[in-house]
Length: 142
Image (cartoon, rainbow, N blue to C red):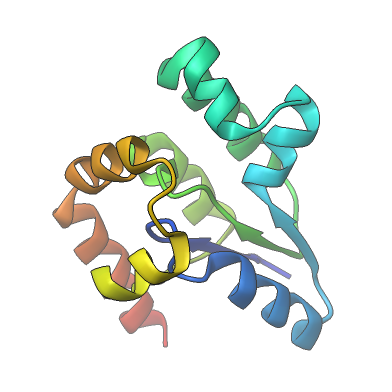
């Protein structure tokens, strides 16, 4: 079975929805942020603080390549995974991308005020055309 890959800004419910989907469809659930934390032995804010975004995005890119080569997964991506078009292309080749969204108020309530520097950076860098493109493809598939 193809993968189901959940993308969306932080706090849109990728992990919650992913766990539910995986259980209902009897698939394996993987959270990319959890994989990175486990492999690095430190939190994502610590990775950003010590090594910077470029290092983090390289880790993320390697995991995308790895997971895109597997089948039968529900993958919750990190909020910024779509900043690299190659990530989107790789995941689209082997699965269905689903873009989750939520209002800013809901996201703020879910995420709180922690790491607002990461939130504000990510909010300004999500390409609107990419979000539209993912949603149009999803609509066409459904």
